[in-house]
Image (cartoon, rainbow, N blue to C red; front, side, top):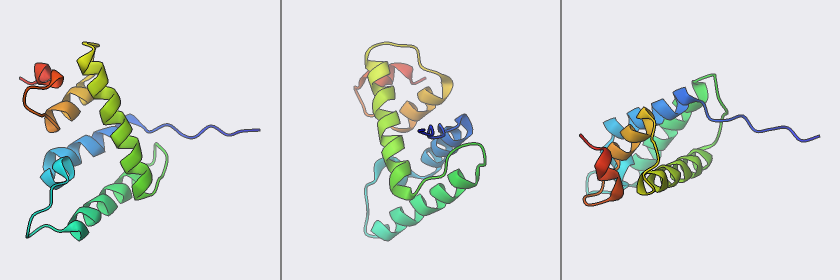
Length: 109
């Protein structure tokens, strides 16, 4: 018998989007002289801890959360390119990761 993996909850996605909105280092991944790889890793550790403590979704290691959110961003961008309806959280995700001249600029206000 196979057990289904728990799905990531809406509150976990919300926590992730809020972290992106607050932390440009998570949004861009670009390091600077005063922000090194250890700062980025520290942010991911804090985020993973908060996501795992949420209580209504799965728990994952940092790498698992990175993979999940990379896939979610990719799927959301594809939906935007194809002019499919986006929910409010997906729109916030794209605004936080906006690149000039891209398909998801349509959703910015």
